[in-house]
Image (cartoon, rainbow, N blue to C red; front, top):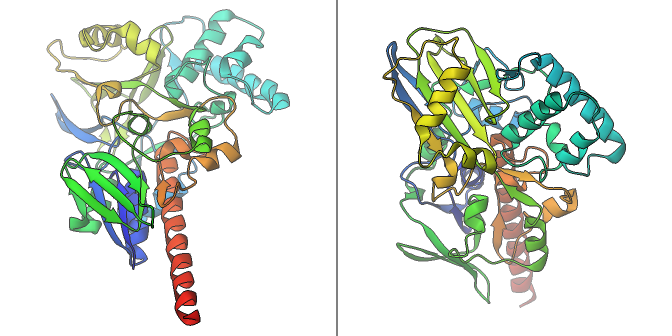
Length: 420
């Protein structure tokens, strides 16, 4: 049995810890927050019709989430259809342009990109599209909102998943997405240590890893670093690296996003409406009780958040959302809940995206161990980058690598004893 440290109790860290625990390894999970889940964060919002669960962080369970569905089944949790599609958003501030126009243009962009194997930026792809500049900008807005970065930086491959244009269904965890990390942490029990911020991770010359937190130091046979991308890049957190890993990280973009929740006086129909100018979209969706009387909004890209001046005047976004969604009855004294992930010191931003130059080989380097330090996170996932599914898959891969390393070390030790 090995002693394994897991840094971070988000979905990546918890997925790794669960797999290691099932393999019989002795694990310790360090989490700086007072709760599990990281950027998965469910809370409740009071409305004139009662209290409802909202997602301040990761929200939509999308097509292809095989690993997440397996974990939900394992812990006795279920999904509820949102009654709308994450991928379908009507432009609410561009008369004459419809969601179907954006979908059609998005499909044309993907077809155009097929000859270049989607190697360039999304912006370079947009520049090749003929037609109405306003329609192209609507497509640009769709990409920037969903990827949480500028179209001039993100790879055109983002159109395949996070900024897809196929009208597929979307789901949430019944009772809130927070229920999954809560269940996983509950199964792990006291090995999850909350309120411990990691300060340094160091490979020991004769094997093992020294972890320093603000509560002390611990030595492990191996460590899985499942911290957010911005924390990994924080110069105040000392982590081992090498030239190849640093080069691969150069092709990963930190996304920036914010969310807004407003109570509604009456139960609305489901909907999804986008502001092209503001680079945000709004939606109303169902939970297990029916359509939730809450207007949700998500703003993506650093430039949009800067223009909206969310840090100083969040009320401006509320006013614009009211104007965009004049079809909904929002109480005049409604208390808005705003979450700006860039301002969260334990996250430093939202999810990641890949820049041009990111390759399968380079992405694999993001998870290649440095000594006895292994890596996991949604930023390192080649297919589901930035998504809950990507975090889970990455965590489980890291756990598999640790188990393989421990088994190899055990066989080598047995062989040495036999020779002696």
